[in-house]
Image (cartoon, rainbow, N blue to C red; front, side):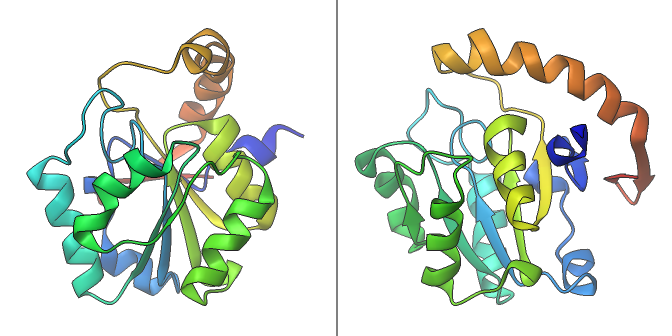
Length: 176
């Protein structure tokens, strides 16, 4: 029953995701959460390392889309310079936002990965559609009050179980 909340992979950062491994698995499309996944919630600029990773993924032919519960202004400010399409006010884990992102990118569920820092929004949402899901350790920074109050407390229980299921492979951590 709890399997719906388990990611396929659990990594410290998106920087630890190997694009060659993604290709081997048939992944060509990546749906990214914004806050605390690619940028701290209290920052309005991507780090040079994250920007370089995103640019590199685009140059390698990966299709990217940011799927965020955040506002158009915030998401657009961060994604606009890289010309990454966005789905805003996504109401994750609802399926509609993920489907909208797939339509924007002309992608299928089978070739798509969801990367996010929250089990009950990003991972659950991606798993509900059968996508490959990657949980990243949240970036340091301010949390949305409800995330801190509810989600992170519930996640602690699941993270203990997920950590026991992790197998290591070239700095990537797969959940068995």
